[in-house]
Length: 87
Image (cartoon, rainbow, N blue to C red; front, top):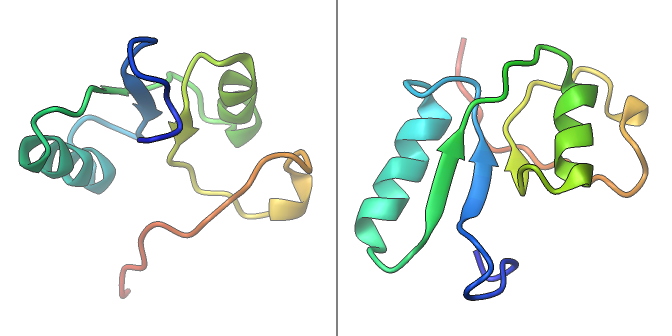
């Protein structure tokens, strides 16, 4: 959240669906931090490389995606695990 300068725009985060676990967690965060400007969006893309391109272009600030080959991502993109769900 601190990565976005005040007054520029809301932190824009891409999730896999508006009813997904990511969206629920972000909504809960937003509700518990009322001063936070947060824009949860869904990019209509299946290819993680297109989501990366949206981050690089500044269309979104972060994206939740399933990436099976992290080596295929550009070097400047940082991937972190957000959820671990038992099967």
